[in-house]
Image 1: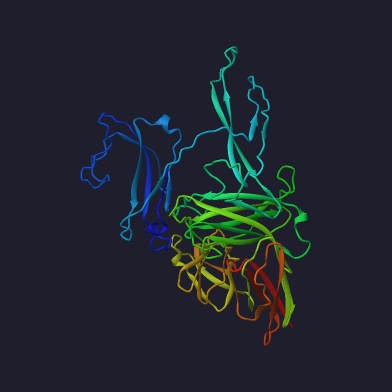
Image 2: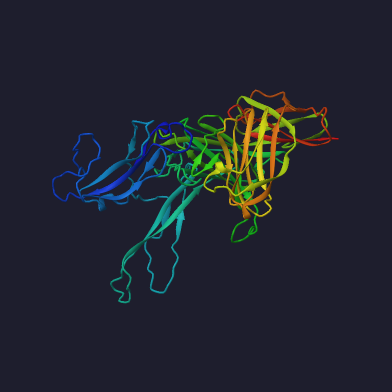
Length: 545
C-alpha cells in the first residue's frame, strides 16, 4: 500500500524543518468476534475514528505500518490471503497536524504481487543429496535481447523433501531461497536508460523506468529511492589526448522532484589488483552537487532548475556505475517516470596554464547534443588559509557554532571552504549559509576534515560556521581554507551556438593580469548547455612573473 500527498501539503513553508504535516498508514487484521459484521461505528458522524468505543474492542490487530517523515508512506504485507481472518483494514492516522494545512489530499494505491517463473534462469530440477555429502547446483542466466539496462532480482527456491525409503533421513521438508541479482549493463560510452523504447519488459516492484518516492526526513542521507546502471568502457572508446568525461542527461516528470546522479569509476586500492578482489574497486568520481543538510533532508538543486539534471564525471577504461537517488519527492503522483542518455565528451586541453596576460583555445567534442552552449570565466584569485579557534559547542545544535566568519562574493564561479589539521584531533563540522542566511551546504564527518562548495554563488555575503561537535579539552585550533574564485579577469569569446551530437566546438579564453603582484593565480572557465551551464569546469592557472 502506498499513500502520497503534494509536497506543499507536507512542508508548506518548504524550509525542510519541523513541523511537518505527516500521516501514518496501517494494515490491520479484522476478526469479527461478535459476528455483527462491523469493525467500527461512527458515533459522532464525522467520518473518522476519534471517540472511545468507535472501533470494535479487540477486533483489530496491526500487521505493519509506515511512519516515515515525508510526502509518501508505504506499508507491505506478505501472503495477506493466508494471514487475514474476516478482513484486512487499511487505516490512516494523522500523526502530525499543522494549522497551515487544514485539509490533506491523499492518493492511495494498492498493489498486489505474486511469484512468477523467471524464464531467464535455468536450474537443474531434481537433485539427491545424502547426509554428510555435497553437490553442485548448475544454474544459467540468459538475458533476452534488448532488455532495458538496470538491475533485476529473482531467486532460486530449493525444496527439500523427505525420502520415505531412507530410514536415516531425519530432516523435515522445507524451502531454502537463494537470491539472484542480475545487472544488465551497457558497453561503451553511449547508451540510453529509463523510459526507452525497449521491448521484453518484465514487470517488477522496482522497475528501471520509475522511481516511487519514500524519502524520510527523520533518518539518514541514503533515504529515498535508488536505481543503478552500469557500463564497461574499453580503452579504444577514449580519445588519446585531452580530458574525457561521461555526460549523463536525466529528465523526469514532476518539477518538485529532485533526482541526484552519482557516478562511480575505477580506482586502485591496497587489495587490488587481485584474483580475489578484482583488478580495481569503484569510488565516486562525480555527480550532482551535494546539498545534504542532515537527517535524510536534501536541499532542492538541479542543473536546470527544474525536472532535468545534466552532469559530467571523469571517465577512464573500465567499469562505471551510474546511481540515481531520489532525494526529494514531489508527492503529486505515486510514480516518477524518468529517462536518461549517456555520452562521451572531451575537452582539449582539460586545464589551461599560462603566464602574465594571454589567451588559449579549448576544443569540445561530444556524443550528446549540447544545446544553447554557454561559457563564462571567473577569477583570478588565490585560496586563503588561516589558523582559527573553535570551542566545545552544543553537539545537538549547530546554531551554537563558536567560529563564524564571512566572505563577500562578486561574480562568483565557485566558493569552496574546507577545514583540516585540528591541533588535538577534534571532531568539528562545517556549515555554509547564503546571503539570505539559508543553509546551503554542510559537512559533518566524524573528523576535522570537512569541505563544502557552491557553484555559481550569487553576489552577497556568505557566512561560514565551524561547529565544535567534540572538541578535545574544550578548545582547539584548526586550518580554514577559503577558495573564492570570483571576478572578471577571465573572459570567454567565440562560443558556438550549440554542439550537435558527434560534433566539435571551440572557445577562446583570455586573461588580463595587469597590476597583479608576482605569484600563481587560479580561475575557472565553466561551460555547457544552458540547462547545465556548469557542466564542465576547466581550471585556469596563471603565473605572474
